[in-house]
Length: 242
Image 1 (cartoon, rainbow, N blue to C red):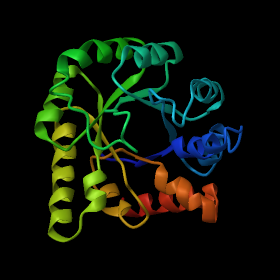
Image 2 (image 1 turned 90 degrees about the horizontal axis):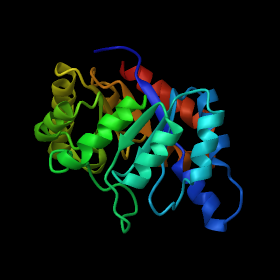
Image 3 (image 1 turned 120 degrees about the vertical axis):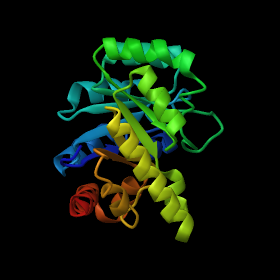
Image 4 (image 1 turned 180 degrees about the vertical axis):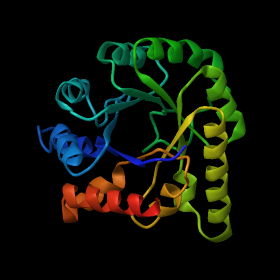
């Protein structure tokens, strides 16, 4: 499983800045279009249950206006399932979600939630969306993804982004082994969370990984350098790793 590594740009935190003032700007859909123009292969947006950043209107506009695929991140709830069924985005990534967390704090327990996830994965798949599960790089979770029939997993790189030294090397190996295991079983591995200019290359170099989803760092850097140049620099770093 080799080929061009895709970049998905998460535009959630453009909406965070907008919502801080309750105004209509900055517009996350405008950011999505700029990111695509700069080389993003897709756009990711997480519609959280509390609507703290992306809103239902944002999702409707992204579906209507994007010329690249939309990856909708969502919790495993009936409300979110109904929204995903209605909008039919290219991809749906099921993520864990807690109201009190600042950001997604870890991977989905696909093994423990198997019975809850099975009908959701089937409905989303039958509705035409490509289902992804955001999981830790663990064989138990990959096995659950296989049994659920999910065509994609997204490996949580949050721990990798925080570690140094031997612990970092061990986590990178864990991610690499998980990507290889998924690919051997016909699942396409993606990765994301906490990736920056400084740490993206080793993840991008994992040959089985086909897509990276990066948001908070890119939006933060865009304050200083502009979104287009920041997306292009990340794209160049990813390409250099291949």
